[in-house]
Length: 200
Image (cartoon, rainbow, N blue to C red):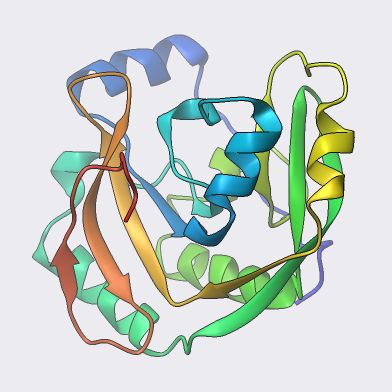
């Protein structure tokens, strides 16, 4: 699967999304990357952004919390059962508007998994349908970028990670997110998660 996969444009208004989010929080599916947490925390000079552990996004937003039923969990477990653990490297920085990220290589393993999830859950397009391409990424910073941040992150590269599980996460009662389920790649069951701080 190439990076140039076309995806749908988002059609919901910001106001409608906000109303729905207030009624039932939106979840997210991601592959955590705990191996890079200390390097990134040192580079950014403290707290990592967004109240999430370092991760490569699979589907965000995913289903709302009320829609995560037994059938949904079983379907996710089947998908991740068929996904074998794999190694990847973070050796290159990239940018979206107001976002600094690390590009995982090979990207194709993440692209294939994102597309498979989209096919099974067509109501949950990658990145909410807001972008034209699937670009696997690990967000380092969102918003105005501190001076010298990219250089500090680049100095820590390359970083090697192992993708061996996916997390289903939802906003917690505070500012952070909580891990609701953890799916080990190659495992048949999703297991209850713990708070995202610390991720492990």
